[in-house]
Length: 115
Ligand SMILES: [Zn+2]
Image (cartoon, rainbow, N blue to C red; front, side, top):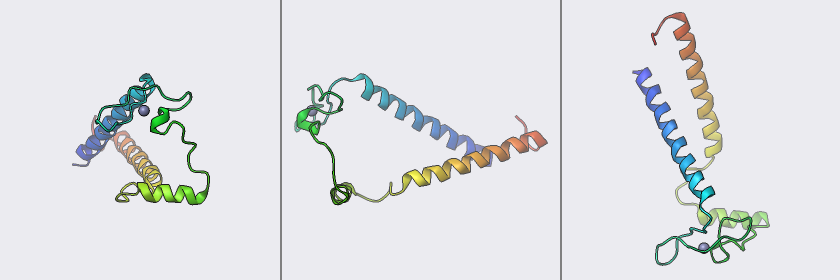
């Protein structure tokens, strides 16, 4: 049961890593802006040098300059709070997986489980 669960979670992690990798490759290899236009198609203009978007889709933006501006943008982007503190939660998750791997290795070494 626990073996199955661990196998499932590791498969899911592999899948997530694969999707993230392919998305990163697409972003790095595609020189176009790619923002969604009003016609629902990706923008075909070239991005501003050193940026990912063209001048019409945020390439000219310098980002928020003040703490108040950052807070305003964060509030505008907030939808459901599902990803609040996700970095901290992910770090905790990683720690738990590390511990699980350690316990599994010890159990294997002690001959409590095979393979
Ligand atoms: Zn664009």
